[in-house]
Structures are given as structure tokens and as C-alpha cells.
Length: 406
Image 1 (cartoon, rainbow, N blue to C red):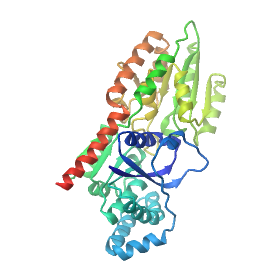
Image 2 (cartoon, rainbow, N blue to C red; image 1 turned 180 degrees about the horizontal axis):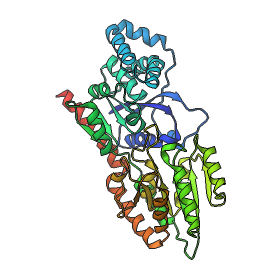
Image 3 (cartoon, rainbow, N blue to C red; image 1 turned 90 degrees about the vertical axis):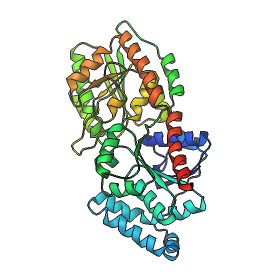
Image 4 (tube, rainbow, N blue to C red; image 1 turned 30 degrees about the vertical axis):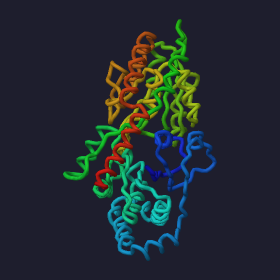
């Protein structure tokens, strides 16, 4: 198929999973075109450079495209504009996005026709799904979108209308599907659960390279995630203080950047953990892989933030498990769909630093790490393999296309 992908920003390190999905679609024989809404400047992303997909960036005004649709389909143009502005009026973020991205949406719609796109797909149910919906209204090209986290937990204006118009709606977890079904109500196409996938075979080699350090060597902890409230890093820092009080030797490396960096640095300093807890900053895909190869335990202490934001199923957690790392994570959202507590990882209550410290201390035992790490690899390979899940996504589109042609 010829696919048109609508994404918020391109290329973006924190959304490497979307790049991997497009790369795998190309590997499986599909043609992908990328239509980003915003540019990320000054970033050379190795995964983006590996894609053959042409990237087309629309201008902010696009007067020619607006005149094109006004002449060709004036009713559809005005109806789509009114729909976007009226049904997003209760959410300032989405309403401003609708107004700002409207010209881009008309230009993207015109370009998609020229590119002979047969299926539009957007990642995130917010601005990208709206642009995909507008392109669908103007061109008639079927569209679908994948729902992740903030686009479901924080910004739901117009979500029901997007679901009603889409050919397929994809949830990354059963937890998300249940929320979407309640939001949509009865009727409409089924909501498919297609997990984000990781490259299991490539990551499996890290387990073979990893060497166990015994005899009192510091336990090497790794956490990967943006420094935002819902990632719960402050509870990891607190758990590290409790580990030190127990006499556990460790080093904790936190990879990621974000607005809470200064606050976390102050917390680390106030607890006297500067020699034991490292804020490593933003890392590339290859740097994250190297960090996983050098770690003993992966920790992701996610919480529900005061805003309501929380995880979907974190891709970094899948990658760590695929790499054979035993993982400690929070029991919330879709994470229990990835980790069965005590079987292929350890789950703790969100925001419980003491439980987090106890779980990490349990993994000071090398045999327990090996057991859970091996089980984690099997779990990810069974349900979160990139090639298998991308094939499932493509089958949804192809099945819908066959039904439409029948």
C-alpha cells in the first residue's frame, strides 16, 4: 500500500518508535510518505536517515491549497473547517491547534492526492488525527490513527467524532481500548489493540554481551524516560536513598531530558546522592542501547501526574526487557499487560518509594536477575515484536481496503 503518515514533529528522538514502525512497513514492501506538522531542527536522527520515505512539509499559510479546495469542494472545505473549530472549542490546546494547522491540513490533503496515498495514518489522537480527518473529509482517502497516552488521558475533545469517521482506530493497550470504547459509546468499527513493537532480535544480543559483576560490585540501575512528572523519577531518587540506608551498593543512571531536571538535581544533592545517582541527559537510540548493555536492572517508577497524564505502555520498558534486563515498573495503565508481577518483572504501587527500593534490592541477587531477564525476553518476543505487530497493522488496512472494494 501507499501510506501517508501524519506526525506531530519529525524527526523526534522521543518518538523513535514511530520511525521504527515506518521503517518496518517499508521493509515489508509498503511505500510510506511522511507529512510532519512541525520540523525538529538541528537533529540528525539515524533512524530517520535509514528511511526511504519522502518527507513533505507544508507551509503555515498554504493559500494555494485553500483556494484549491474552495474551488473544488467548497462545501466539504467549509464543513471541515467549522467541524474542527466548533468541536474543539472546549479545549484551548486543541482549538488553537485546529486553527494553526488548518492551512497545513489543506496543503497535506492536496499533496496526498498527488502522491496517490491510499491510506492515511496518524500517530496521536490530537493534532495529527485532526489533520488526518481533515484530509479524509477533503479527499475521501480512508484514515486511521493510533492512540497512545496524553491524547487519551488529557485531550479528548472531538475524539468521538474522529473515531466515528476513521476506518480503524488503534489502541496500544487493552487498557486504552476500554477507555476508548467508553468514550465512543455503541456502534462503529472495532477498536484494534496493536502494541508498539521493538526489534527483538537486535536487542537480544545485548543479553549475551552483558556480564554479571559479582562480589559486591555496585548494582547498575538504569531508567530511561523524559524528565516529566508522570515518569515518577523523584520516587526513584527517594528509593535510591533508601537503598543506600540498607547498605546496598549501586549506581543509578537516569537517561532523558525535560523540565524537571533542575528539581531532580536539587533532590539528588539534598539527599547526598551525587556520587550514586546520575542524570545523563538526552541520548540517541544507539546511546540508549549502549546504556542497556551496561545495566543490571531497568527501573521505571511511573505515576499518574496531577494533570491526569500517565504512561501507555512505555517503549523503553519493552526495549529493556527485550535486551534481557529484569525490570521494576509501576502497576498502572497498560504496564501490567507487559509485565506479570514476579514472572517476567516486578510491579510496585505507583509513588511508593519503599516498595520500589524493596523490589530493586530483590534484584541484587544475580540468579533472580537472570531468571526475570530471560522471562522478560520471552514475553516481549511473544507479544511486542516489531515485525509481527506492524504486519498486524498492515492487515487492518488491507482488510478494510478489500471490504471497500467488494
